[in-house]
Image (tube, rainbow, N blue to C red; front, side, top):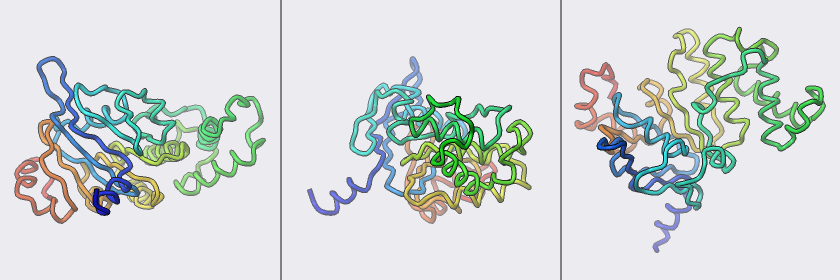
Amino acid sequence: MSNDNKNNVNDTVLSATGLVMRFGGITATNNVSLNLRRGARHALIGPNGAGKTTLINLLTGVLTPTEGSIVLEGEDITRLAPHKRVARGMVRTFQINQLFDSMTPLETLALVVSHHLGVSKDWWRPLGASKQVTERAGRLLEQFRLADVAGQQTKHLAYGKRRLLEIAIALACEPRVLLLDEPVAGVPAGEREELLETVAALPADVSVLLIEHDMDLVFSFADRMTVLVNGTLLTEGDPDTIANDPKVKEVYLGHGEAHV
């Protein structure tokens, strides 16, 4: 193996090869391969029905592929349970779509951090009893612009803040691979800027796969893009290549996504 090939292998944190997902006579994902490099900002795009959700469900273990394999940091996880993938560093924001409405962001993050650090058995201890938990939760509140609402019940938070809290919960698990599933979906225009800036400032050592319909976010965030159509990989490349690809333009024509 050449040095270049060795570097490419070492650089790949998540690799999906030849993924096929059949539901009866329907092929939802057809021989899709994807490599996520360490520290990547990679976007997965495509029109509705392209197979994006199916692919993410395969990567996260919600579905088991009919064919193909998934490797995370050199370990085959094709048939690993979702919670075990989280323990190995793959976290998806969509997995945490039910926030604790009666808890505050501080309480929520302290609970998640405690569980991640293996001290959740001491749930009965007063909040703040563990300096490590308190400091980690505090840093997350600052990082995700939640410090000003740290003591408010989650049910009273603006929707944009709830989305920020979801991402903060994911980061509390200290992922090496983060799958962001449409982070700005449903967020009002007045709350989007804060969310976009926070997503842009995610830690450089976290490899991010972004699934998103908002092309402004995609093109401002991603350094590489994969385009799916009808469950098949249409093309992959850097943003400039994708923006000028006639096949991509044809796919999005009439979909209100003239950015590409």
